[in-house]
Length: 530
Image 1 (cartoon, rainbow, N blue to C red):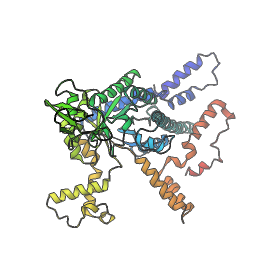
Image 2 (cartoon, rainbow, N blue to C red; image 1 turned 30 degrees about the vertical axis):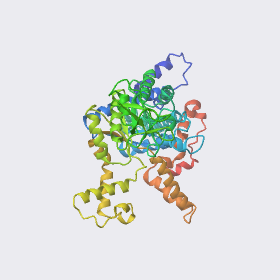
Image 3 (cartoon, rainbow, N blue to C red; image 1 turned 90 degrees about the vertical axis):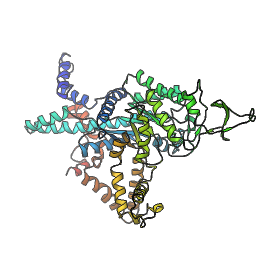
Image 4 (cartoon, one colour; image 1 turned 60 degrees about the vertical axis):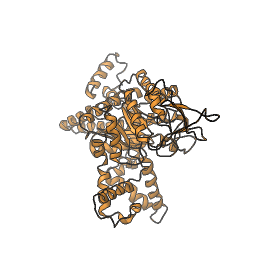
């Protein structure tokens, strides 16, 4: 229903009250409804799931239609990101938000900063989803409030043409609410625990849940050592649990992102159950590093039958079993195929470097079985992008017979190379990485897990250096406030951003001429009007 239609509907309802609601203005009701488009988190999840499904279909038709997101650790950060996207690009299309378990552990746990090992409170995940959408909905209310003021001003000036233009903008307002891909880690427990947490995340608004195939109580960051995977059937139980949660909550289009950490995980906690040779359990066990035994073996040995012969899987003092070296890619491919065949919508391969051909080599094999397989890929800050791509260019030049004697491959991160031809080509490859990987390696969604963690640290360091140094107040004014004004950053009017003007509107709705409003002539925010 458009703003105009909603106003007419509210007017009819008010007139039906025999004068009891005469102090209620239909247009104010329509404005408040427009500013509160989404009533529940499930409403948001249904709406954003449809967006993701449409985007996935568009990508299948043309991989130039890939999508992107940045990880956000606070509702305000997500809000400012989406406001900036609308300001610079005019639309939020194909831009999402990523919710990183790493950043929740490091920044949002009541225990204080924690490593990414699922030690933080599981309820902090849906809490952050709800917080993000609260801030995004407030961004809608703020933006629409500005349009309402412009409409009132145009009407007061008798400018009907401008008033119609603003009315059109209100009726066709694009929300700041976009899909969130939310990290549920390894489910924080068994399949039932995964299901219960998934419901809370969906209730908060999540339309896409990312789950990984690590052992829940041994979970590690995907870019750290010591990762332990589970047999496929254990992981598929959790994928089914997510689907049941989506279906129960009425979000039939919900998206499941199945992440495999097998490329960097050389350990398993369990030997998979197998009914017959070649089944999924047998395939998982075939990757185990085993050694021959004679007779019955040693006391405490676990023995398995491999091709009619008893062998001993190598077991570490930690009681974990070891995979054969060099099997990571094969395990990743099998993980992805089985996940997609059992209800996952997107796959995520956690790699140790951003190398398109490495990713594409696995995707080619996956697509032999599942032709429309698509990836969400972590453009991780754990990669040294500068060094990695300079080394890729170095290797390509060397292979092509180009003289690389001016470069030390091990020291290519050095500032001494920043102005070099090699560095320029590496930067070009970084610039086109997402586009090229979407086309060649099946990557539908590119995300950066922790960017706003790093930007907050960098900007705070720069401010502290200047403000507490010789620049003092000029360090803030020149590098923060003046930059905000010059770049049109909405937050320069921080009272407005916090909802002061929305509060004034409500005061006027409720109290009329008696309203005591904050936005009078003495409000210092007026200094930023010019």
